[in-house]
Length: 190
Ligand code: ITT
Image 1 (cartoon, rainbow, N blue to C red):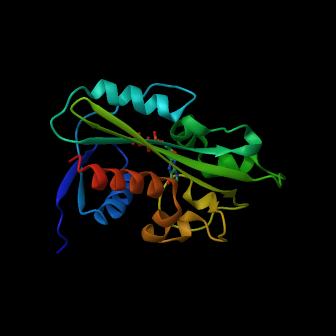
Image 2: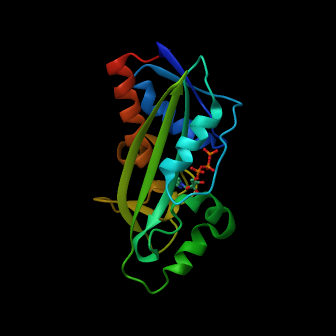
């Protein structure tokens, strides 16, 4: 049985995000629980703005809340889909992205994750990035979203071919939640 000292509440509809956050934060003895609090999502060109707006909308809370906004930024497509990744994934999926990059050798891309923390009036933002490239075909069955077409730097496998533990070592979300964990540990904020 794992022992947890602290607990934070994650406002998200994406259960994979909760699993990944829990994996990273268990190293800091922090338990992650889902909350029914809604993440109000505005459309914006920056993930930071989306996260800050949502954190402000949550209002003052006694317990610590986190939210996260992430996106896939493809170099050749001038950063598309970026902050619109969720919508684009629902509309065209991995196959649609592969089509947009058909016959294209410049396939560099990066995932970005912005994690927002709020407790009472205190708001903090953490950023994680993962450079890589878009594969030529979908491979792997793990993970979610664009995992089957994203190959992180210094790897030959897509995120979808890795275990959750391996993905979190390199991933944007892994880095952002690790930064949150380190900050909580340092300042004993919860
Ligand atoms: P919440 O807003 O409720 O947290 P969401 O899935 O809608 O959940 P985002 O608005 O942050 O999350 O959308 C980011 C999208 O980018 C997500 O739906 C995926 O399609 C894609 N994405 C982000 N991180 C990813 C990852 O680690 N692996 C694969 N795709 C990812």
